[in-house]
Length: 429
Image 1 (cartoon, rainbow, N blue to C red):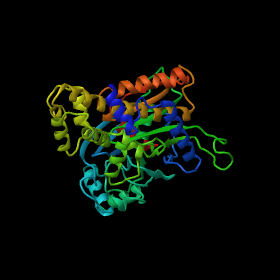
Image 2: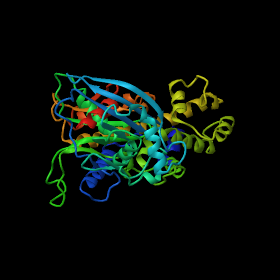
Image 3: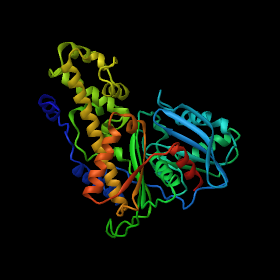
Image 4: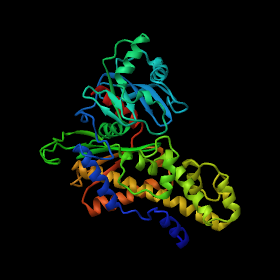
């Protein structure tokens, strides 16, 4: 990276080669504060569940996946050998994305979306990818919404119980159980469900880096972590990693935060996830244009841009000479190089933050101490897989930091239909 670009980023408190050790320590300390019921950014949500010892057999379950911009539903059936088959799949818009909804409107839109599955099972696995408190009977009570979903009346409402009442009012048979899980829990459970014969993992992590960003891990039982005041149970814990507020913000992050409908919340997510990375890139080049890093022609186009999405910034990183929204801004070779360096710095920081989150989860799990018993890290999300060089950087940084420096072994796992199958397993636990 050239001196001028480096100087500009550092001037605005944007870290180059973010210190993974320091970030991991900060995130881990915040996690432990949350576990011990002390003040923390992350919620550290108890799920009251562990992965099942064996795959479900001879059962069907309705699966709902609500998160990001899409709402997915289907029926999952486990056969006599535990093999899973998916049928009746549909995808629609997530309620509350296009406009603010009341509680009644929100749950009726969900019911509308799944009415075609009426009475095909009396159990529902509901992947609800927002911060929520999980009750011991498997219900979920939202603490708030991210990813620009607007349904404030739903906050504090038991989602499973309310949905069950709405479905029964529409003539559905009484539901035996609606189990609410976060998508990270679904990913974690899928890692267990898809574990290959011949591999014995010591623990499991579910990691999502898509529209939003979050992680879940298995917390070992501990009577000493929090002193004598709080006993920490052995269970899956959802970290709500995106709410961590212990990582310093750049000027660009602050500008993005101020323009969201939840300023001051989900600060780490706003620097990492697909819903916001394009906006960070936009704030970076907008300020760079003001400070003369681009030609006057390019700067004029940037000032008229209005907004930028990750898919557009990523298209430029993948093909900087191919005509597109970003490439067409560049009037000179120097414009193109500067644009690439700035966007690439945003992706580099994203990779380092993702590694810090995963490393903190791996350390807290206590697993991975033997190379023949690694930690399974199931990753999911279009941002993780499709953003230019992000996955490769995460893998490389994890290998260096976790294994070479800290002696913690891991395996990044990818599985088809992972969230769907993991949610189905949760619905039958």
